[in-house]
Image 1 (tube, rainbow, N blue to C red):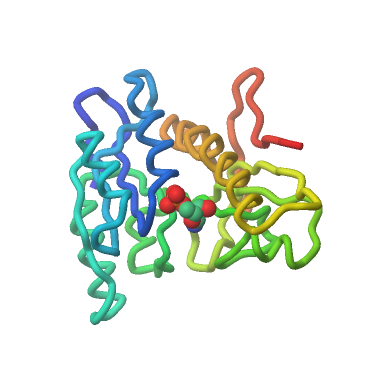
Image 2: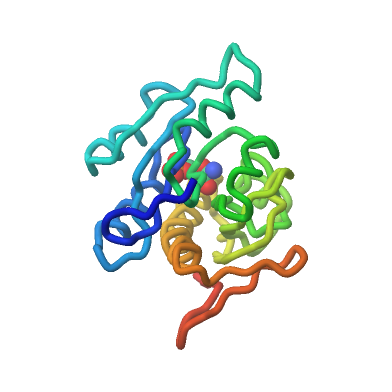
Length: 217
Ligand code: GRF
């Protein structure tokens, strides 16, 4: 399964369903040859999404693998076939839950970014849920993916203050900005083999001055 890239960087596949702004953050980080991961494949489950254009602009091979009108098993088998030569997988706005038949092929090697401070507000509409609940801090989480919905070990988190005049859109935009900073940082740790799992806890071998959290007021 693992095939080293010519530059010795870790080969990463990214799964997307939409705009792909988090994909862009990963592509931008990987544009630096010193970054330890290379995006070698981008797969969308929805045809025509903007994320595919971002990948093409960066010269990354893409595929569209629709999930509709078929079994989950057949969808995931095609995803796996398309990811045969990647070592890590990043979900970036990918709106499908993956089952063990996919995850077992990448044990503790699938990352996701979620727009909430997990374990609060898993699932869809994290920013809306935070606003409606009356939270005064919201944020984003990068975590390893397990078979639950947004339940895997937490790698990094960032928080933002909820403003009195926030709408779902304004809060989501600030959270998205945090996601774009957190995700490349977490993928670096993954690619450098600095993440270990103890129970449900991810441990990171942090370098001097590194932190697993960001705070924006
Ligand atoms: C992000 O908040 C992501 O966490 C969520 O969908 C939003 C859009 O992501 N799952 P992107 O611009 O497609 O990366």
